[in-house]
Length: 238
Image 1: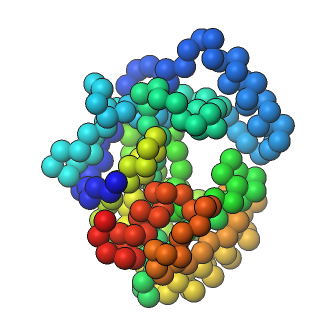
Image 2: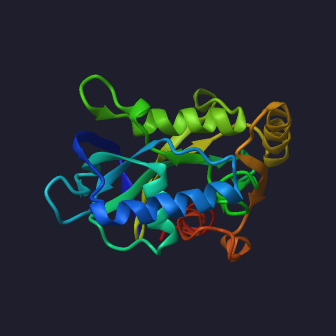
């Protein structure tokens, strides 16, 4: 489900992800197995946003998405994801850079083999983390989107025209898409990104791909929220 929004106001609150004590050993064992299979993974700190319907949970009022988040670790998030997202009162809210070209294409990234989402296709973006929180406890979702865009693709959001923001609710995931229209064609954007990727020592993206119609994203490796964004941006309102 998509919602047009004008602003995002998230705050960090005291506390952590609701992980029962007896589940922690299972999470640690799961992490050890995942790390053995992929030594490139890193157990950093991530933020989880409280689910709609509870105090401080995600809500949209007057076009403004608000909510509160708590801090956890990537190992716990990965176990939660791999175990099918059991309901724990948390949503994985994160930003997505929706890159549009001057000739009407949507540019998505193909995740590299060294990442936890190898082979999946979705917009550049990433989990919110403590570095996104200012001294007042406010979480900078837009700043996170712009940073991830720069780090993953080399693109500067300041060079694009912002054409709005869309919140995509995809079960346990909530992606905040910032629509960025660049003045270059899809081929030019892709060439620039690929050149930047070749200079990166540890790239998150294997490559980027241009899509021009929603039907082109009807593939299992494309995430549901990416398909929803494409349906709106390439094929009319949803």
